[in-house]
Amino acid sequence: MHIWIDADACPKPIKEILFRAATRTGIPVTLIANQMLAVPRSPHIRALQVPKGFDVADNEIARRVTAGDLVITSDIPLAADVIAKGAKVLTPRGEPYDKGSIAAALTLRNFMDTLRSSGVETGGPAAFSASDQHAFARQLDRELAGRKG
Image 1 (cartoon, one colour):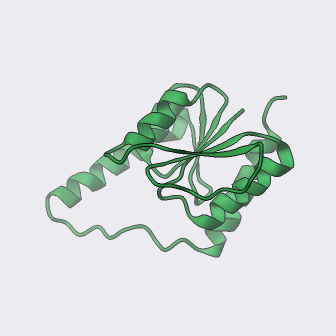
Image 2 (cartoon, one colour):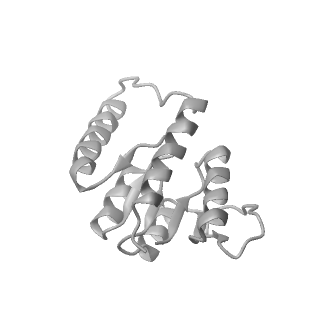
């Protein structure tokens, strides 16, 4: 298992939880972003900077991910791509996506995008909260406990 982080929009508290998990478990964690990222010195943690551009980081994650990996992202199309390759997805708010739930998430995303394109104000996601952070930590522990060897 390898943990890939769509790091451009990942909240700092979630990155810190993942850094501790990498240190505790020895599972490699790679942050991919189009900007330089500071990461702790660890043989299990690395950051990869990609060029700026639309979906460049997402495409790099999709290219590198393999079955059994875990991807941390809020990006629904990226989630669909990596699930198709056999990886698992967890949002920074602790919501897991899998083959059974990603189709509905894509449909909702596309519907909301259509509304926004037609001028309907849909608002954005709620502010990231301490309860989101705790939900993420709980779900990450479940994912790591369920991993194979």
